[in-house]
Image 1 (spheres, rainbow, N blue to C red):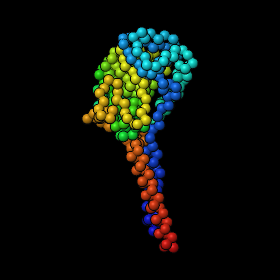
Image 2 (image 1 turned 135 degrees about the horizontal axis):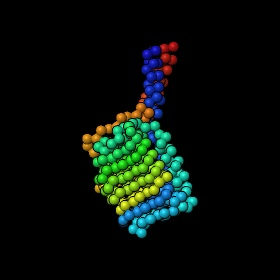
Image 3 (image 1 turned 90 degrees about the vertical axis):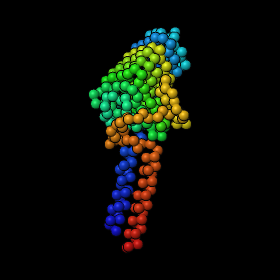
Length: 299
């Protein structure tokens, strides 16, 4: 009888001790900054034909140049109250992303597949050559946060692939210095840079370029503010060809990142994991009740 009690108590505790590790990472709240495709502190400069879907904001600077060749599907807010509020909300979002507990991974992201979680790099830099795949494992609410203690730099022709219900609106890149997207690259997610952001010739972004204390520099780009789909469909990165369902398949040969013991990089944070916890909880409760009944009968 004592053995049964121990088994029931062990199962019960196992559910509650493992439950927090499976908790999903909360998204970074952008506030009003979430309505902007481009937001900068000092200047916004463009060269060549650029298309922007989403608002463009600048504060406290007032120099928006080269926009005669920009097709803007949104509103400009230059040194006004709306831009100021968005900048304040950006500071809050940046601090939120910076405060998450990460799993440490290598500097080069290309060729790897990441599940939902928070990641930083060994030497503070983030680099991308080739393709990095973000795999939500069927959970459209899966959140990905990458922290760079210095720079984010992507190579020419590189891309971010969104797989298995990953949405660009739930991808965040916190950059302590500056971010540069390479020529003809296709990037996805919201870039929260402390300093400046540069999109070189032909770079495409599904997400937002949000620079807290510097400039945003554009050159013949396509920027589409990421909007979460209520149907849970993933948004592929700009400039890529989506497969049926709007999901890009994972690349082959990628190496999964280490799993965080805190649950930040835990690949079991989707709905399937939650269902497992629920089933395990019910089983543990049933075992506990059975033990108590047997104990009562014995007495």
